[in-house]
Image (cartoon, rainbow, N blue to C red; front, top):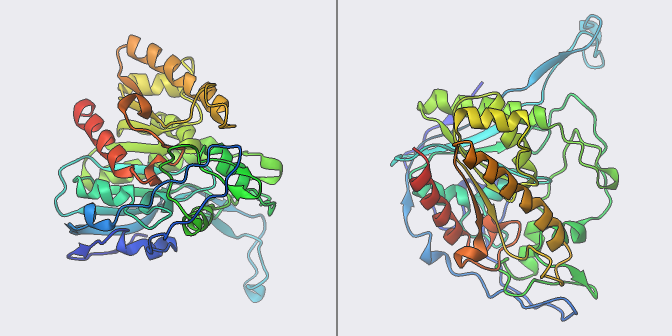
Length: 383
């Protein structure tokens, strides 16, 4: 069942007016100071006012929320109507689907863009920034694309699961902050990498950490990530197929981090992917994998984006070496993929003169610059 309502116009002044769906604040950060440490601790400058990027009126022709994919499980026995409140025999559960919030702009002149978040995240990350600026979903709507924002199975508003996970309550903000190459934590303070584009201040940090969302089907104790990639990939493919049914157009799939792996696999379950834009995926597809074969058969153009602070030369960035290893898989993939006649581009933002970006480049202060770069790649490479 689709829940949908139509509105004539939607005026945006910064973050999406419907950001209440994601429970986020639209109040810009007032910034703050960073304690000195042995780490590079240059504080990012304050975020620009919304006047530079959010003065346009965005008119939405259609929007709604629906579930895509998933299965139905059934318990043994016969349901006891007399004890309906406690009986679980012979009962069903609708589980393992994606939840999709979509918007179609009045001036739609581009392909649909389906956004898949990464580990510990939900679609909220595409809708806003930690300091309340405009997110990528608004930016690409203004560029003429419809946007389809997924909460992947067992996450966010798609929490119904067929497997019971164990959600850890161990504090881990410092771990992920360091892994995401924003900075690290030294001498009792969060630090920023030198030249960081991450939004400054305690308020922004508070909003960023509160975006983190547990996976209801994952045993997260001890840092394990036993996410079922196939379950996610099949639900993503179902969302893409639904976008095709509603628009008659193939979709550009935009993935982030952990979402990269099911993003590759989704090509095995749908033939309606026009292109894949992978924002710092954990790994690129292995050349001998079924994912690679499906993508190559459909000749899906691919762009892999990586930010700054990657490489052994960044001795003050603990995660730099790990990300260098993961990014190298993009080069291996691209060499084989292009040699086989398909198109793949690896974009390291510093090589493009865009510096200071971390793992969450689409939430950084220059997220509009990167969105423009993505749009330029789409215009040049996606038919």
